[in-house]
Length: 232
Ligand code: CTP
Ligand code: MG
Image (cartoon, rainbow, N blue to C red; front, side, top):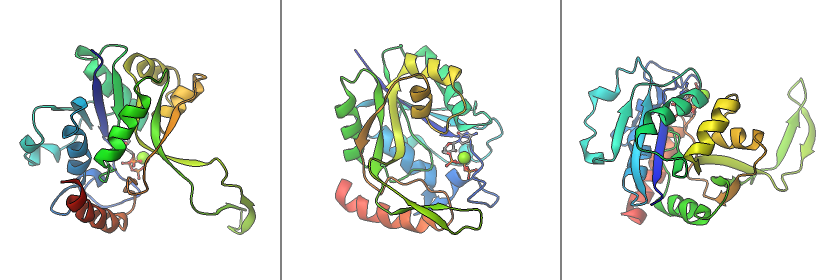
Protein backbone atom coordinates (compact mmCIF):
# COMPACT_ATOMS: atom_id res chain seq x y z
CA UNK A 1 0.00 0.00 0.00
CA UNK A 2 1.18 3.52 -0.83
CA UNK A 3 2.02 5.63 2.15
CA UNK A 4 2.30 9.33 2.83
CA UNK A 5 5.30 10.47 4.82
CA UNK A 6 6.11 14.00 5.93
CA UNK A 7 9.50 15.68 6.25
CA UNK A 8 9.63 18.98 8.14
CA UNK A 9 12.91 20.86 7.65
CA UNK A 10 13.50 22.82 10.86
CA UNK A 11 17.23 23.44 10.89
CA UNK A 12 17.24 27.07 9.79
CA UNK A 13 18.43 29.96 11.92
CA UNK A 14 15.71 32.45 11.00
CA UNK A 15 18.17 35.19 10.03
CA UNK A 16 15.45 37.48 8.64
CA UNK A 17 13.41 37.03 11.81
CA UNK A 18 16.41 37.88 13.99
CA UNK A 19 16.88 37.28 17.70
CA UNK A 20 18.56 34.59 19.78
CA UNK A 21 15.86 31.94 19.53
CA UNK A 22 15.50 30.35 16.07
CA UNK A 23 12.26 31.29 14.30
CA UNK A 24 10.73 27.82 14.60
CA UNK A 25 10.84 28.06 18.41
CA UNK A 26 9.37 31.55 18.71
CA UNK A 27 6.35 31.59 20.96
CA UNK A 28 2.98 31.60 19.20
CA UNK A 29 -0.21 31.43 21.28
CA UNK A 30 1.70 29.77 24.10
CA UNK A 31 3.55 27.13 22.09
CA UNK A 32 6.62 27.09 19.85
CA UNK A 33 5.69 27.96 16.26
CA UNK A 34 6.84 24.60 14.94
CA UNK A 35 4.27 22.82 17.12
CA UNK A 36 1.42 23.94 14.85
CA UNK A 37 3.15 22.90 11.63
CA UNK A 38 3.82 19.45 13.09
CA UNK A 39 0.36 19.14 14.64
CA UNK A 40 -1.34 19.77 11.27
CA UNK A 41 0.59 16.84 9.78
CA UNK A 42 0.37 14.52 12.80
CA UNK A 43 -3.38 14.82 13.09
CA UNK A 44 -4.03 14.14 9.40
CA UNK A 45 -5.09 10.52 8.97
CA UNK A 46 -3.44 10.26 5.53
CA UNK A 47 -0.01 10.97 6.97
CA UNK A 48 1.69 7.86 8.35
CA UNK A 49 4.87 9.33 9.84
CA UNK A 50 6.49 12.71 10.32
CA UNK A 51 10.23 13.33 10.46
CA UNK A 52 11.31 16.66 11.85
CA UNK A 53 14.82 17.56 10.70
CA UNK A 54 16.70 19.51 13.37
CA UNK A 55 20.09 21.14 13.34
CA UNK A 56 22.82 18.96 14.90
CA UNK A 57 23.34 21.85 17.42
CA UNK A 58 19.65 22.28 18.24
CA UNK A 59 19.27 22.85 22.00
CA UNK A 60 15.62 23.93 21.96
CA UNK A 61 13.76 20.82 20.78
CA UNK A 62 14.43 18.82 23.92
CA UNK A 63 13.18 21.61 26.16
CA UNK A 64 9.58 20.82 25.16
CA UNK A 65 7.30 17.86 25.64
CA UNK A 66 6.08 16.67 22.23
CA UNK A 67 4.18 13.59 23.39
CA UNK A 68 0.79 15.18 22.68
CA UNK A 69 1.62 14.98 18.96
CA UNK A 70 1.54 11.19 19.21
CA UNK A 71 3.53 8.26 17.89
CA UNK A 72 3.92 9.39 14.25
CA UNK A 73 6.55 12.00 15.09
CA UNK A 74 10.27 11.29 14.94
CA UNK A 75 13.05 13.84 15.41
CA UNK A 76 16.39 13.55 13.62
CA UNK A 77 19.38 15.82 14.20
CA UNK A 78 20.69 15.83 10.63
CA UNK A 79 19.89 19.31 9.29
CA UNK A 80 22.30 20.72 6.70
CA UNK A 81 23.59 24.11 5.57
CA UNK A 82 20.63 24.73 3.24
CA UNK A 83 16.95 23.82 3.27
CA UNK A 84 17.53 21.46 0.36
CA UNK A 85 20.36 19.70 2.22
CA UNK A 86 18.18 19.38 5.34
CA UNK A 87 15.42 17.78 3.27
CA UNK A 88 17.86 15.44 1.51
CA UNK A 89 19.25 14.35 4.89
CA UNK A 90 15.71 13.85 6.19
CA UNK A 91 14.93 11.62 3.22
CA UNK A 92 17.97 9.55 4.09
CA UNK A 93 16.68 9.16 7.66
CA UNK A 94 13.31 8.01 6.28
CA UNK A 95 14.94 5.33 4.12
CA UNK A 96 14.23 2.61 6.69
CA UNK A 97 10.48 3.09 6.13
CA UNK A 98 9.95 4.67 2.73
CA UNK A 99 9.75 2.96 -0.65
CA UNK A 100 10.41 4.73 -3.94
CA UNK A 101 6.70 5.00 -4.82
CA UNK A 102 5.57 6.35 -1.44
CA UNK A 103 4.53 9.98 -1.27
CA UNK A 104 6.62 12.46 0.70
CA UNK A 105 5.16 15.78 1.83
CA UNK A 106 7.83 18.36 2.63
CA UNK A 107 6.45 21.11 4.85
CA UNK A 108 8.22 24.18 6.28
CA UNK A 109 8.39 24.33 10.07
CA UNK A 110 7.64 28.04 9.62
CA UNK A 111 4.12 27.56 8.13
CA UNK A 112 1.98 27.04 11.22
CA UNK A 113 -1.42 27.78 9.63
CA UNK A 114 -1.74 24.82 7.25
CA UNK A 115 -5.40 23.75 7.21
CA UNK A 116 -6.63 20.16 7.10
CA UNK A 117 -8.71 21.13 4.05
CA UNK A 118 -5.62 22.18 2.05
CA UNK A 119 -3.66 19.15 3.19
CA UNK A 120 -6.43 16.78 2.08
CA UNK A 121 -6.88 18.67 -1.20
CA UNK A 122 -3.17 18.19 -1.91
CA UNK A 123 -3.30 14.44 -1.21
CA UNK A 124 -6.54 13.93 -3.15
CA UNK A 125 -5.71 16.00 -6.22
CA UNK A 126 -2.30 14.39 -6.61
CA UNK A 127 -3.31 10.82 -5.77
CA UNK A 128 -2.92 9.60 -9.39
CA UNK A 129 -0.49 12.25 -10.58
CA UNK A 130 2.64 10.97 -12.32
CA UNK A 131 4.80 13.89 -11.08
CA UNK A 132 3.38 15.29 -7.84
CA UNK A 133 2.86 18.92 -6.96
CA UNK A 134 2.60 21.71 -4.45
CA UNK A 135 0.13 23.91 -2.62
CA UNK A 136 0.13 27.39 -4.13
CA UNK A 137 -2.00 30.51 -4.44
CA UNK A 138 -2.50 32.77 -7.47
CA UNK A 139 -0.64 36.07 -7.07
CA UNK A 140 -3.17 38.70 -5.97
CA UNK A 141 -1.13 41.92 -5.85
CA UNK A 142 0.03 44.00 -8.80
CA UNK A 143 3.70 43.29 -9.39
CA UNK A 144 6.34 46.00 -9.88
CA UNK A 145 9.85 45.49 -11.23
CA UNK A 146 12.30 47.76 -9.37
CA UNK A 147 15.24 49.58 -10.92
CA UNK A 148 18.56 50.17 -9.16
CA UNK A 149 17.13 53.27 -7.37
CA UNK A 150 14.17 51.27 -6.14
CA UNK A 151 11.87 53.10 -8.49
CA UNK A 152 9.31 51.26 -10.57
CA UNK A 153 10.92 50.23 -13.83
CA UNK A 154 7.71 48.60 -15.04
CA UNK A 155 4.59 46.72 -14.02
CA UNK A 156 4.84 42.97 -14.57
CA UNK A 157 1.87 40.88 -15.61
CA UNK A 158 0.66 38.58 -12.86
CA UNK A 159 -1.17 36.37 -15.36
CA UNK A 160 -0.42 32.75 -14.62
CA UNK A 161 1.79 33.56 -11.64
CA UNK A 162 1.37 31.56 -8.44
CA UNK A 163 3.09 31.78 -5.07
CA UNK A 164 4.56 28.45 -4.02
CA UNK A 165 3.78 27.16 -0.54
CA UNK A 166 4.34 23.88 1.24
CA UNK A 167 3.59 21.00 1.61
CA UNK A 168 5.22 19.95 -1.63
CA UNK A 169 4.38 16.35 -2.41
CA UNK A 170 6.47 14.04 -4.57
CA UNK A 171 7.33 10.37 -4.69
CA UNK A 172 10.18 9.37 -2.39
CA UNK A 173 12.42 7.93 -5.14
CA UNK A 174 11.98 10.92 -7.45
CA UNK A 175 12.59 13.45 -4.70
CA UNK A 176 15.76 11.74 -3.51
CA UNK A 177 17.14 11.65 -7.03
CA UNK A 178 16.31 15.23 -8.08
CA UNK A 179 17.56 16.79 -4.82
CA UNK A 180 20.89 14.99 -5.27
CA UNK A 181 21.14 16.23 -8.87
CA UNK A 182 19.79 19.78 -8.35
CA UNK A 183 20.47 20.88 -4.76
CA UNK A 184 20.43 24.64 -5.42
CA UNK A 185 16.71 25.42 -5.53
CA UNK A 186 14.76 27.01 -2.68
CA UNK A 187 12.04 24.36 -2.80
CA UNK A 188 11.56 20.75 -3.84
CA UNK A 189 9.50 21.69 -6.91
CA UNK A 190 12.43 23.59 -8.44
CA UNK A 191 14.58 20.45 -8.25
CA UNK A 192 11.78 18.48 -9.92
CA UNK A 193 11.45 21.22 -12.58
CA UNK A 194 15.21 21.18 -13.19
CA UNK A 195 14.84 17.47 -13.95
CA UNK A 196 12.43 18.38 -16.76
CA UNK A 197 9.13 17.56 -15.01
CA UNK A 198 6.14 19.86 -14.34
CA UNK A 199 4.71 19.74 -10.81
CA UNK A 200 0.95 20.35 -10.46
CA UNK A 201 -0.27 23.50 -8.70
CA UNK A 202 -2.94 22.68 -6.12
CA UNK A 203 -4.83 25.73 -4.96
CA UNK A 204 -4.35 26.40 -1.25
CA UNK A 205 -5.15 29.55 0.66
CA UNK A 206 -3.20 32.59 1.74
CA UNK A 207 -3.41 31.74 5.44
CA UNK A 208 -0.72 29.08 4.88
CA UNK A 209 1.94 31.79 4.66
CA UNK A 210 5.51 31.46 5.87
CA UNK A 211 6.45 33.26 9.07
CA UNK A 212 9.55 35.22 8.05
CA UNK A 213 9.58 38.48 10.04
CA UNK A 214 8.52 39.19 13.66
CA UNK A 215 5.33 41.00 12.54
CA UNK A 216 4.16 37.75 10.88
CA UNK A 217 3.65 36.15 14.31
CA UNK A 218 0.69 38.36 15.12
CA UNK A 219 -1.07 37.46 11.87
CA UNK A 220 -0.36 33.75 12.46
CA UNK A 221 -1.81 34.02 15.96
CA UNK A 222 -4.99 35.64 14.65
CA UNK A 223 -5.39 32.98 11.95
CA UNK A 224 -4.81 30.16 14.44
CA UNK A 225 -7.35 31.56 16.85
CA UNK A 226 -9.93 31.78 14.06
CA UNK A 227 -8.99 28.34 12.80
CA UNK A 228 -9.41 26.70 16.18
CA UNK A 229 -13.11 27.45 15.93
CA UNK A 230 -13.43 26.23 12.33
CA UNK A 231 -11.19 23.16 12.40
CA UNK A 232 -11.87 21.49 15.72
N1 CTP B 1 15.62 25.15 6.92
C1 CTP B 1 16.36 24.00 7.21
N2 CTP B 1 17.70 23.99 7.06
C2 CTP B 1 18.36 25.08 6.61
C3 CTP B 1 17.63 26.26 6.29
C4 CTP B 1 16.26 26.27 6.44
O1 CTP B 1 15.78 23.01 7.64
N3 CTP B 1 19.68 25.03 6.51
C5 CTP B 1 14.18 25.17 7.16
C6 CTP B 1 13.72 26.28 8.12
O2 CTP B 1 13.92 25.87 9.48
C7 CTP B 1 12.28 26.48 7.74
C8 CTP B 1 12.24 26.10 6.26
O3 CTP B 1 13.47 25.44 5.96
O4 CTP B 1 11.41 25.62 8.43
C9 CTP B 1 12.01 27.32 5.39
O5 CTP B 1 13.14 28.17 5.50
P1 CTP B 1 13.10 29.72 5.89
O6 CTP B 1 11.71 30.17 6.12
O7 CTP B 1 13.96 30.43 4.91
O8 CTP B 1 13.77 29.69 7.35
P2 CTP B 1 15.23 30.14 7.76
O9 CTP B 1 16.20 29.69 6.70
O10 CTP B 1 15.44 29.65 9.14
O11 CTP B 1 15.08 31.72 7.76
P3 CTP B 1 16.04 32.80 7.04
O12 CTP B 1 16.05 32.44 5.55
O13 CTP B 1 15.40 34.11 7.33
O14 CTP B 1 17.40 32.64 7.66
MG1 MG C 1 16.08 30.47 4.65
